[in-house]
Image 1: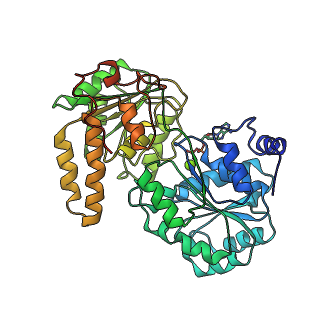
Image 2: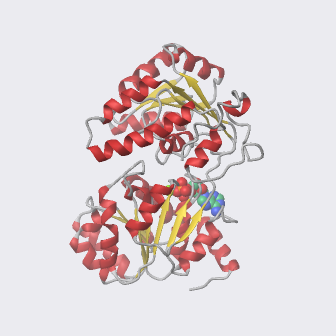
Image 3: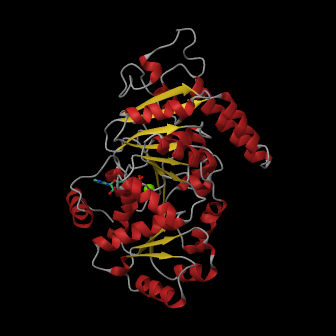
Length: 421
Ligand code: ADP
Ligand code: MG
């Protein structure tokens, strides 16, 4: 199937109301429409969903979209129903559906109404579903958050490992599109190997976020006071403060409140009602600050977060990039401040010592790299981008002066020795 550029633009406008493609979307979409295997690496917010949604709407048959989170799937299905006249244009197939709902989904697929079928990887193992999907026309399989396949990713899901053999059973030569915001070469290799798509055309966007300012400060016993000072200086602006433990989240939120800062806590220990209440308060700007564990952030799209503070060092550069990436989505100011003390590293190491050896080894290797980041005296942006396999010119590159090391260079002979890999 080939569409000319005008037809493609028209469909983009018709379905999504956008007048132009973002970044690499257009070549990606053409490759998917042509029925080729495709591998997309774009930072969060880059517009990956459209890379499979638009081809799915255009192509004959139903596209299967594998995604790890029910909430993310539901959001997308609701949005797609909003842009289509057909309620059944998109469905989620999961264990929460009753018999008649499953029947309806199947009917919509058979009738050719359903263009996108969202499934969690574990649902896809159900024999009944596999047999049904064998009997219908599938356009392609999209695997969103494809890094879940790799133990080197930040969100390993063993069920993702079975996808290849399931897809093989669904039909012959079904094209695959894998998408992720994880750019590390190790994860990339794992994805290609596990999905067995060595021929996939790779589309990789730059991970540089030139509007983000990166800073690391030593963490002392006065860290809470340091944070309060920072937050007060940025009063009226939205910010996220990440802490490792739920206990610290609650403590720090309270300390901030006592000091006159409007802040809410957020962690997975609260029930879902409380969590959405606090989340909404932050999104609606009833409060400036959310103090959170890493449970906060996935799928949150607040464009004007002006700073992200790490009270504790995160467990990998990958996580750090994801978490800081929530700042400055609108292209405006985004200050990323991490507090670092080697004691925290020892804490994380100790925490990992209870885990299986293989997991420990990976965890320690990732931790070692974030330590090198915290201790480096070279451009932090260069360091991060190098980790993602990207060259960065620390003199001419976009955002070259946007970190503490670039603004206050340390002694020359020191610089550079910490660059890993
Ligand atoms: P990702 O999955 O890469 O994190 P999303 O698919 O969630 O990104 O898209 C991020 C945002 O970009 C969404 O709000 C989406 O509506 C918007 N977006 C996607 N493509 C375009 C486009 N061509 N023009 C304008 N906005 C777009
Ligand atoms: Mg996405």
